[in-house]
Image 1 (cartoon, rainbow, N blue to C red):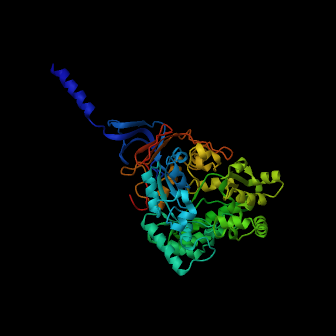
Image 2: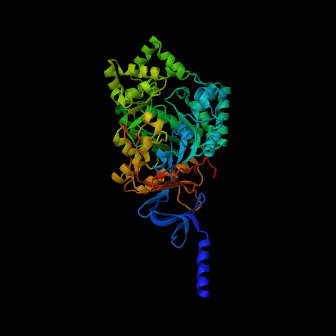
Image 3: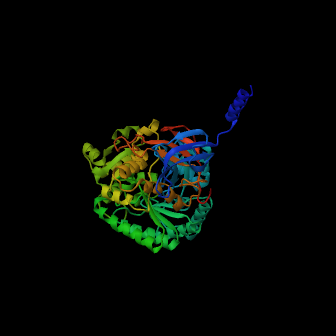
Length: 548
């Protein structure tokens, strides 16, 4: 009689014994994030942390993931995301999560703080008033509200300038510059990644090099980064790159080029020299890096086809000037005239290479996906007149795609060991109001396109090298602690995908198509993507430079 009783007791004891780990990912091919050779192993997660790596076959878990035949990597870092507004409305970050992105970095010129009351009224309107003032408060608000990805940000040089100088085309006074530096210092104290600029756009265009050096000196004190959409990516690409390198040298700061490119066919040959100048600066000891998206077209607005002077004072002033007959005539002439004084993406792309993709007015949405050349022919007018009319009638800058780059240069850039990656886009779900405009397909496909087309299909770089440049490389550059590697003690930001099937599907004509091939994504240990489906888990956190 004792044996059955003993057996029952053992069964009861086993049933009551808690599992060894919360989650065990079993039998996957692990890519450590540092570029090392992949290896088959198990990985355990407890709470938000990786707690064991190796042969865990004798251990139990609340959740078992069979990763046989799949790649297990650190979660990816999107070096330039435009998703702050998207995440306020929908924290799932679906288009990024299904590509393995676990950290979105904001702040190309514009950041969600610091704000003053004037900026809150002008930038957000009466019905969308911010509940935050500082950049840190915004990121923490997203965390509290619920967000699937981690979020981080640079402080925007444009935002700091608007805070003190507004939209005026002038240098700040010494007192204003001191206040701008104080705002940058506060943002750095609050954990910003550094200072981000976007120098082709008004009012950022009005900042001179010395202003940027002075702000970057503050960033340098905190070992942050100066990151820039440079003053030119086309006709004056090399001169703009020299400015970024000079800022890095004079301020003693790390610097990165946002979405490096040579825009316009006449400038494609400049890429080799741009690479040579960056590598010479790196040899000198300057920490210069770059990031990119994996497409031959960029996306912005029709403001990038019009001179900065007409945009002084903000959008309302810009639109009002365009409605003045004499001013309009001057703008049209400058839009058609080659110049090195400002970056005219419209001339670089040509009217056949300018596609309008986003409108506020329902009455204009039938034009989505069409080029300025096509619309102009239909209306019996010029492409430049179409651009001006659309800005006036839509009362927005009008979302626009510019076809500018060469495929050869895209491949050449991917091969560079100091190149990270970004979407330069929002993060969407293919549903609801999102379908009212056509975003650049990079929003849905940038990272899957890298891993599918350029790594698997074309073999430009190895998978382990691609993973390094999506994970530990940007994490180290940003000064982020505890992320970017598969190591015990690191946060459990993990992507699990099939290298043989990961694929982008978004096109310029039909961009609202999610990438496929990503099986699971964990963010701070939360199982956000399970078997390719979003679970609704909102385990993302605000991430600050130097803070764990």
